Amino acid sequence: MLQQTTVEAVRRRYAPFLRRFPDVGSLARAREDAVLAAWSGLGYYARARNLRKAARKIVSRHGGSVPSDPTVLRRLPGFGEYMSSAVAAIAFGRREPAADANVTRVVSRLFAVPGRAGTARHRAAVLARASEILSDSRPGETIAALMDLGQSICGARRPDCPRCPVATHCAGRRSGRPERYPSRSKKPRALAVPLAAAFLERRGRAFLVRRSSGFLAGMWEFPCGPARAGSRPAARARLSRTLKRYGLARDAEPAAFVRHTVVNRRLEIEVFRAHGSPRRADCAPPARWFAPAELARAAIPTLTRKIARSVGFLPGSNRRKLSPS
Image (tube, rainbow, N blue to C red; front, top):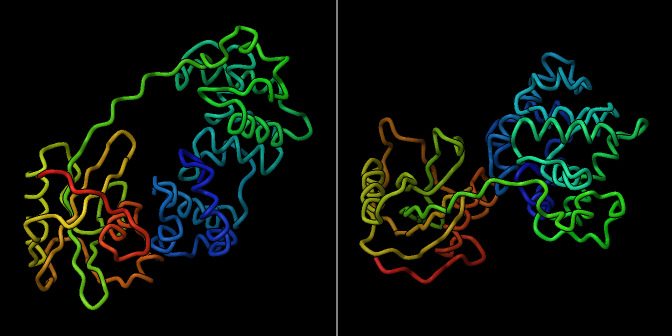
């Protein structure tokens, strides 16, 4: 859950997820949409799909017990080099170095490791240095401590060196510019992407369609035009074509406006009210009606929740001033 997701966002989902799936067996038996619903709001939904696939493989091939060998763990869906090493060290006490972004930053500064984060050479150098300081008896605690240090004190832009318990050993601090370790590539500029979505309500229920492909496959969303770079009129036209497949049409003017960022794309969404009686569409994604309580528990991405709030269907408000057409 913590991969590319903030602690604050995970804190709201972690305990409820474990209550719903308390062990590997319950996760392996669960339907994919149930797992996606429990993951809803955390983004990067391939993680949830892979977690369920890994649980099923653990049950079918390992008797329901999570393997402790990092080599075996790497064969599980979603378990890359870092995840396999972290689980082996933290859960099973294997002396296996693991470096997420926080550990990479701390170790890079502690030893003044040169190079650019994300490159194979830099990653190998960080893991070699991390291996040098791993506890022989409790290596997992060393890794967890480095993670916490990077998250709470050794921040990316403003490391709080006076509070750091290892400051006297830090080569990066002695250099006078610890924040330059590690060097990083410039982030790409955010790309503004116009999008149009439709909200149709009948007897207190909202009409949603299920995404059939892409990284949001299996998630429920309001009908919309594909999120591609282009003009706002093009986005409106794509939405109209999507609605026509279900026998629906949209109002001429939007009812709300929502912004949402996905990686380096800044989605600017016009929300239109739709009208008509939806029909089953051939070769189109499945659709169904959701009451507010059902939607709150469904497998929906954050954007769907924002749109529902923008039109007052869910509590809270994401309503923004409409931009000129």
